[in-house]
Image (tube, rainbow, N blue to C red):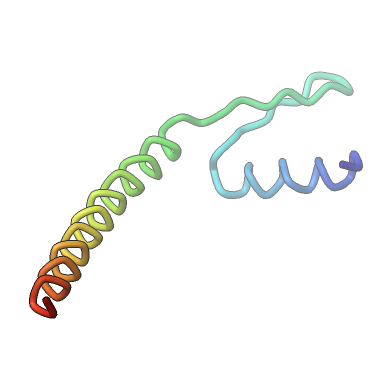
Length: 70
Protein backbone atom coordinates (compact mmCIF):
# COMPACT_ATOMS: atom_id res chain seq x y z
CA UNK A 1 0.00 0.00 0.00
CA UNK A 2 1.36 3.42 -0.92
CA UNK A 3 2.09 5.86 1.89
CA UNK A 4 -0.51 8.32 0.59
CA UNK A 5 -3.21 5.64 0.56
CA UNK A 6 -2.24 4.52 4.05
CA UNK A 7 -2.35 8.10 5.29
CA UNK A 8 -5.79 8.60 3.75
CA UNK A 9 -7.08 5.47 5.50
CA UNK A 10 -5.79 6.76 8.83
CA UNK A 11 -7.53 10.09 8.18
CA UNK A 12 -10.82 8.26 7.60
CA UNK A 13 -10.40 6.30 10.83
CA UNK A 14 -9.60 9.49 12.72
CA UNK A 15 -12.61 11.33 11.26
CA UNK A 16 -14.81 8.41 12.37
CA UNK A 17 -13.41 8.63 15.89
CA UNK A 18 -11.83 5.18 15.81
CA UNK A 19 -8.28 6.50 16.24
CA UNK A 20 -6.69 9.73 17.40
CA UNK A 21 -3.35 11.17 16.45
CA UNK A 22 -0.72 13.31 18.08
CA UNK A 23 2.05 15.03 16.16
CA UNK A 24 5.41 15.66 17.80
CA UNK A 25 7.84 17.26 15.39
CA UNK A 26 7.69 15.25 12.19
CA UNK A 27 6.34 12.12 13.87
CA UNK A 28 2.61 11.46 14.03
CA UNK A 29 1.51 8.78 16.49
CA UNK A 30 -1.89 7.10 16.30
CA UNK A 31 -3.82 5.50 19.15
CA UNK A 32 -6.92 3.35 18.97
CA UNK A 33 -10.03 4.76 20.62
CA UNK A 34 -11.56 1.73 22.34
CA UNK A 35 -15.05 3.08 23.16
CA UNK A 36 -16.39 3.33 19.58
CA UNK A 37 -15.00 -0.15 18.91
CA UNK A 38 -16.78 -1.48 22.00
CA UNK A 39 -20.03 0.04 20.76
CA UNK A 40 -19.53 -1.54 17.34
CA UNK A 41 -18.73 -4.88 18.97
CA UNK A 42 -21.92 -4.74 21.02
CA UNK A 43 -23.96 -3.97 17.90
CA UNK A 44 -22.34 -6.92 16.08
CA UNK A 45 -23.04 -9.26 19.02
CA UNK A 46 -26.70 -8.24 18.93
CA UNK A 47 -26.91 -8.69 15.16
CA UNK A 48 -25.21 -12.07 15.36
CA UNK A 49 -27.72 -13.26 17.96
CA UNK A 50 -30.60 -12.07 15.77
CA UNK A 51 -29.23 -13.84 12.70
CA UNK A 52 -28.52 -17.05 14.60
CA UNK A 53 -32.11 -17.03 15.90
CA UNK A 54 -33.47 -16.40 12.40
CA UNK A 55 -31.32 -19.12 10.85
CA UNK A 56 -32.41 -21.57 13.57
CA UNK A 57 -36.04 -20.73 12.76
CA UNK A 58 -35.38 -21.31 9.06
CA UNK A 59 -33.68 -24.62 9.84
CA UNK A 60 -36.67 -25.80 11.88
CA UNK A 61 -39.08 -24.66 9.16
CA UNK A 62 -37.16 -26.50 6.44
CA UNK A 63 -36.94 -29.66 8.53
CA UNK A 64 -40.69 -29.54 9.16
CA UNK A 65 -41.33 -28.97 5.46
CA UNK A 66 -39.13 -31.91 4.54
CA UNK A 67 -40.92 -34.19 7.02
CA UNK A 68 -44.32 -33.16 5.68
CA UNK A 69 -43.33 -34.20 2.15
CA UNK A 70 -42.52 -37.76 3.26
